[in-house]
Length: 132
Picture 1: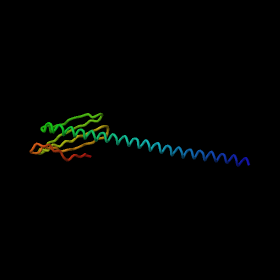
Picture 2: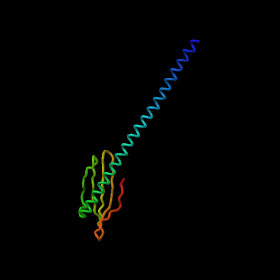
Picture 3: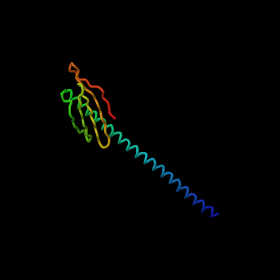
Picture 4: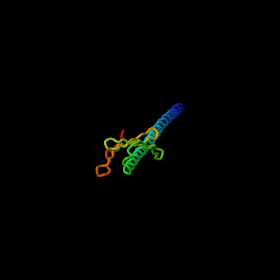
């Protein structure tokens, strides 16, 4: 009878070790999934921040063009927080195309917008879009 008790307690130890290994595996998988979600969330937040910096650059360019219609030439550089923004201007047939490119780390976003003055000197802009 003592033999059965001894072999039974050994089986219980093996079952306990297997259950602990399974629980540890589940806990590790859950932790790794949480870390992955946190990294993804951080990248999404940075991507939005860079996008809005590019929009700010485009708005800056439009304000500059409204104040001085002859300023559609060259480039401007801005720093918004830790994001660098490069604004380039090109004039074709009376329409000024603005490209505001914002970059931080390996994330780059570009906003393009066209603007012009009509014959009554009313400022118009159109074609506001993100360039992939």
